[in-house]
Amino acid sequence: MSKLYIFGIGGTGARVLRSLTMMLSTGVSLGDKIDTIVPVIIDPDASNGDLTRTVSLMRLYKRVRSHLSFENRPTKSGYFKVGIDDMNTNFRLHLNNVANMKFADYIAYNRFNNQGQADSNQALLSLLFSDKNLACPLDVGFKGNPNMGSIVLNDPKNTESLMSLLQHFQTGDEIFIISSIFGGTGAAGFPLLQKTFREAERLNMPNSSAIANAPIGAVTVLPYFGLKEDQQSEINMETFISKTKAALKYYIGNLNVDNLYYISDFIKNRYDNVEGATEQRNKAHFVELAAALAIIDFANSNIEHNRDMTYTSYREFAVRSDANPLSLNDFCPNTFHSVGKEMMSFYIFSRFYMEHFHDTQNYAWAKTPQMKNVSYGDAFFSELGQFVDNFKNHWLKELSDNQRSFQPFDLFTNDDDVFDTIMHIEPKKTSRLGRLLGKTLRGYPAIDSEISDVSMKKIRGLDAYNYFMAIHEEAINNVIKKKYNI
Image (cartoon, rainbow, N blue to C red; front, side, top):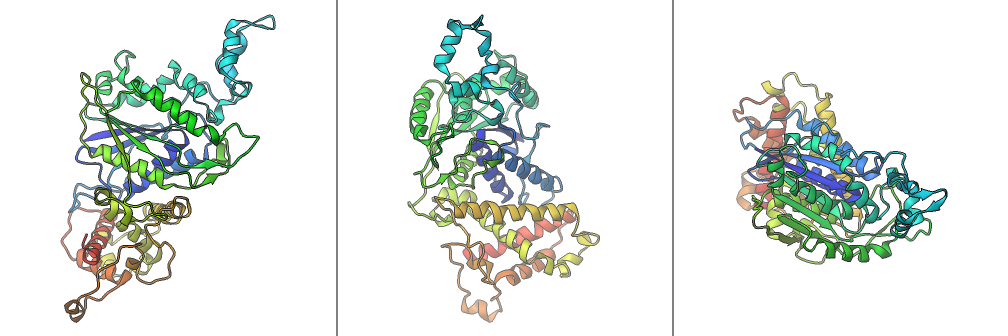
């Protein structure tokens, strides 16, 4: 099996990786080739709230996943199936010489000065970069200035950590790049990064042939949110469109990727104008979820790169209607087929785990040999609880509360039947014969009954954690199939 190296550039890259991590927890497949992703965030702003939140989530996913195995599972699939490996990077690519340094110092601006008089080189730099650019501390990012980002990210010193990361790259591994096109870090980093990969042999990178010939996919996120006006901020949303046009013009003839995805939406929401650091912590947005779906599509496409005949497939994402809020019913058939059932299943599991699981620990399944000596207060069950809380009460809620709103589920209903909380997808009515046979169970009792049936099977070779996950997932999927015929 192969790995997919994913480079999330800037705040948008971090937020898309957050959505991808949530989607992978549901058991979404990355195809027959990819069993592990290697996600890395590239951002000089080490304290960026979007970055630190995503890193914490991926570390939590990795800890939950470390307890699980799928070789002996009856279906060889399940929640958290895809592995996440940070390759000892803590999910970040280190940039040299940006901490506690202003941009002027980074480019040695004052070196071009003769006895207090600017020489021609310094005069040129003054034309290219404003006084605010020069005074900008690099450890809070590039503040929407791709002209600064292109200098720092193109520095040969910053390829050292990249080379270290790619020392385990093998033939069959693939690359994906996430960036926005209307900011500073992403707009500068994307073309430079893909160029570095394609020129891996010239740069004497490790495994250079495998890297240079690897399939590369990328999603470039066009403007999809605005910022509130702030005279003190260097970031001005009025420049978003002009930056986008300039970047798109540059991309023509300067990219060598196999699949390029474009994602955008009408600007329906304006966030607080925060230049970076811990306060930059945007709510999850549907466009970021759509960008994560691009990664899933790329991994399932079985692309092969032909270095002698460069051909780029350009792709866009669409929904069936211009609805607000959107629901799963607004996904096109191919998208729903890829992720719809998995999202429904993990959402129901999350609610079951948070609201009902502790009432079932004396049921028959909990007394099977596999579960005999389990402590439900151990790290696995605690971390699983943290993750499902993140999934339902934070990520899904933020998607629901944002604009454009994505509301696949009624998250906080008091209805006692969780199967009635799937928005705009009605469960089937129980037939007369079903009622006569007693098949009228609703909500959690229906899942409990199915878990009892599944646990009666002779499931061999599974330890407690894998047995627990396997019987609960299979039971929920069985009930979903009966109630929705999917």
